[in-house]
Amino acid sequence: MQIENHTIREHNESLLAVHRRKLEYVMEAVKNPEGVLRKLIEFEVAIPSWALGTGGTRFGRFSGGGDPRSLEEKIEDIGLLHALNRSSGAISLHIPWDIPENAGTIRALAAHYGLRFDAMNSNTFQDQAGQSPSYKFGSLQHVRKEVRRQAIEHNLEVIRYGVELGSASLTVWLADGSCFPGQLNFREAFQHTLRGLEEIYAALPADWKMFVEYKAYEPNFYSMTVGDWGQSLLYTSKLGPKAFTLVDLGHHLPNANIEQIVALLLMEGKLGGFHFNDSKYGDDDLTVGSIKPYQLFLIFNELVEGMDARDMDHARDMGWMIDASHNVKDPLEDLLQSVEAILLTYAQALLVDRQQLKAAQQANDVVAAQEVLQAAFRTDVRPLVAEARLRAGGALDPLALYRSEQVRKRLIKERGASGVATGL
Image (tube, rainbow, N blue to C red; front, side, top):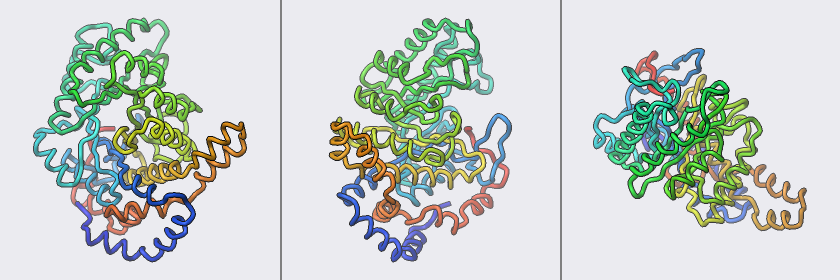
């Protein structure tokens, strides 16, 4: 289903007077508001195909109803999100969960909704139906050559699908590692993995990027073969200029200084993209900004500073994607909340007075530096984000409109109450 343009216009008209009063105050209070609005309009967050259905844990999965039953319906749902917020114009596919049977038809359907295809994601952390050999003891790191060969061929297949769909990047996340001391020879595991990544890298089209994602633990708990940003940076440095590190906010040990990691990867020209989520304990995959909004702001502060230092295009030179599992929420509402949180935090980071911050840092004025950052963080930028959406043709309050149109109820009526989408 879709929300018609006239419905969005009527919604906006009902909120316009209040919005303009709030916007006027913010526009006078911040520097260069038009520049901030331009950047917000350009900014886009990719939606992963696996996040559109109700997620689950190892204990259970409880569908909320109306889950998309096919890739086509997933594209339709992302089209709905994009119509509401005008910042979700990209879809990231996971293979083999969402293999396009006819790439031309799928690409045309996405274009109909104003969507493009973002990074392609491979899967060597699960055995598929009828698969042999197994990934039980790893994929690219595996001691058996035929398992490594299978993992390489799968990634090459994912690249081929991506070319057909118009994607330009491949994300490789490996569950490879060990659960017990002595299980692995760490050096051999690294060398096997590097050789596999080198073969995959060599198959990339000229204009593609490879993102090597790291994770501190899970599903292996003693070691991970790409366990932290240093290991990922080591792989990508050896692979070449088209290889980059990808940061998932939930893939760190507790209290990791992610903003420092971001700053150093940007300095080295090796930060390729982000998977946004939030967490209390580990890889909780919670709504972006729901637990640690100030940490998210500090990360965006380093992103903006680092990208500007390298004269990067904020919207196009980095891969931005949500990676979450919505266990107890309507997944579309959760995604609307996550995109909103990302845009709000990005806007706050754009408001940081860089000259004042630099002066405070050079003077070792710790108090002044903190005040500069917190002044931006405490600025209510919601009217700016809403105005950017309005100018782009979206809804002033996407979540309110989604609820008033009873979208989930209509999806359940159309698709049923018990379907389970592919993916998490």
